Every structure is written in C-alpha cells, then in structure tokens.
Amino acid sequence: MKVFNFSPGPACLPESVLLEAQKDLLDYKGCGMSVMEMSHRSPEFEAIIKKAEADLRTLMDIPDDYSVLFLQGGASLQFSMAPMNLMNKHKRAFYVLTGAFAKNAIAEAKKVGEVVVVASSEDRTFSYIPELDRSMFEGDADYVHITQNNTIYGTRFTELPDTAGKPLVADLSSMILSEVINVRDYGLIYAGAQKNIGPSGVTVVIIRNDLLERSPADLSKMLSYKVQAENGSMYNTPPTFAIYIAGLVFEDLLKKGGVGAIQKVNEQKAAILYDYLDSSSLFRGTAEKKYRSIMNVTFVTGNDELDKKFIAEAKKQGIVNIKGHRSVGGMRASIYNAMPIEGVKRLVEVMKDFEKNA
Image (spheres, rainbow, N blue to C red):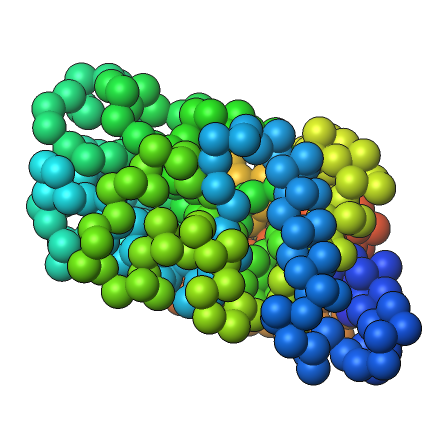
C-alpha cells in the first residue's frame, strides 16, 4: 500500500524525482557508473553541482552578490558555523527564542560569544512568535538570528523583524522553497535539505559575499564560509548523491512553475487542514492562528490515550509519521512541497471518521 508520509524529516520526495533517480542509479546519463561512484572532480559531477546551483538561484532569485554553498553537518552544524564566522567584531549577537532548534542555536552561539535573547515565546510552549520591534535590536551586535519556521511547534514568522541594519541570519530548514522570499532581506540563510530539498546529508547555505570576509583566518578550513565559497563547496568531497537529488528536486520545482506556484498549493493544503481543525469538536490546533505554519501543522485531542489511538488508526489507513514531538504531544502533519493535496484530503477524511466514531 502506498502511504502518505507526513514525517517532519527526512520527508517525502516527489515521485517523479525518485523515478528519475531510479532510472539513473546504475548508469548516469550513459557514463557507465552511478552518481554515487563518480569522482566529485569529474566533468559529470561538476555539471550536476553547477546546474543545481543555477536552478536554485533561479527558484529563489538569488542575487549575484550572494554565494550558494552545499555543505554537510545539517542545520545543527550551522548553529556553530554562523557565530564562528560572523560573531567576531562585537562578539555579540541577538537571538529570538521560538522553539527547540532556536534554543540549540543559542546554546552553540554562547560558546563563541555573548548571546542576547531579545524575545521568547517559551512561556506558552512556543505556540506563538513574539512581537518584535527595531528598538530590540539597537546596540552593538554582529547579527540577528531567527528560526523562521518552527518544525516542532508549528509556528512561523509572518513578517521579518527590522534588525536596525544588522545582518539577518535565518534557519529556513523547514520552509525553504515553500513560499516566495526576498533573499536580499537576509545576510545568511541556511537550511537542512531533508524537508523540502532532498535527502539528509546536504545543507544549503546562502550568504551575502561581504560577510564572507568576516571568516577568521585561523578558523578551521572546513568550518570557514570563505574557504568553502572559494572552493565551490568542494574543499573536500561533498555529499555528491544528496546534491544530485537536490538538483532533481530543483528541476522538478521549476517545471511546476517555481516557488510562487508551489506556494499557492501549500497555502491550499494548509487551509484544508486548518479549516477542519477549526471546525472540529475533537481535534484542535496548538499554534496560535496568527503564527500558524503552512509546513508543519500541530494538533491534539486533549487526551493522550485518544491521541495514541488516532495515530495507530491513521497508520492502518496509510497515514504515517504523524506523531507529535514529545514536547508538544499529540500529532504533527508536515505538509512539505512533495506532499500532494490528495494526502492532506485523505488525512482529513481519516480525522473525520475517527471523530465520528470516537
């Protein structure tokens, strides 16, 4: 039985991408070997990584004065790399605490310099995004950091903060390519691939070129944005197969009309699920309406045993990986780009049937 996979990551991939990868698995475009076997210095792989970057630049309208890097270590390594590279003038940065991954980013940054948490939503289990204004970011600091979409808690920034001229560093792992953004609003964007880009193993970093000059000369070369940019993400062997799959995803998204087109689909999917949650007498969403994510929808029944029963019943109906994070409980439906509308409609059908019989 084909299931609908609502996992928060690694997440479902477009079927067309999986079929293309299957076709190329043993012999990539007639070269006689798999992408997993070829040298990262070969002309074949060089073409793969260059096309992947070019397609991503097109999808996100990335300006020429920004570098695109394909790195390893996940977004979690970026929690360290960002401060290591950027927190070197004032040794101070402003962070907004909106969830578990923001908390992890803060903990790593504290090992490098001073972290000022300007606002937090921890008081209500991260169910909202705190109100921010320019005055919070005045004073000396090297950058401002946000986690733009909170995978675990189902919230997102609906507008970016005014950072008083400081570079905005943003973790976009669970929302990159899901909606149109203006890259020029950011100094640094990073995103683990395993939600909207491809399989785990590659992390996309988009950095304004002037910020590359902040990388300390004595920083480990593997951790230096400047060194990675100068070497085209190939200072060492990159995650070749993951980059290849990411390239197929970018190509597929372009064929579907780009980010603007997929945003409309994503908003439609989210509306189907949220509309049902708002009308249900059994299920309720946990994120405050104003800040609801269109990628991660968190909900509960209010009864732990009933939640477990629903998760088990949903699995029997082909709805898998919807168990919520332990800090929130209940359920979480991650409806990334590759999740079809049919999957969301099927989830709602299963929820309605369960509510009727509860």
